Length: 142
Image 1 (tube, rainbow, N blue to C red):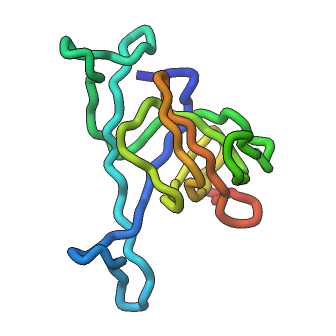
Image 2 (image 1 turned 135 degrees about the vertical axis):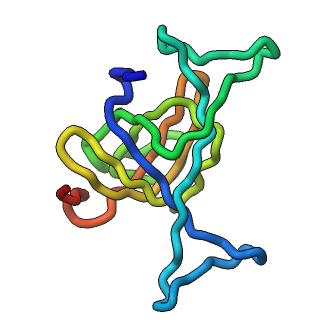
């Protein structure tokens, strides 16, 4: 369902790890990345999170998330923590942890670009992600 709060899409990738927790590399020594499968909370027609009879959230697994800009002026500083990020975006409530360093491929109305997760915080209505863009201009033309 389309939600105007989150009109764009993103996919996430993390390094593949072997049975010992060590990064898997290709023949050239580059880390192998695998797509992240997200456990997300389902939303109803009124954009409220759906809860089951037990009171827990109704969830589903997806490989792509909708998202929207919250602050895109660059140089965001979070007052509660000592860190800086280029953008703060929001998406529906995700239950899958997104740690520092997860790579995102984001598509908005005009471009596709890549970014690295700096911080992720889930609230009762959604998840905020603080990200740093990769590259000088942050954009990859499609």
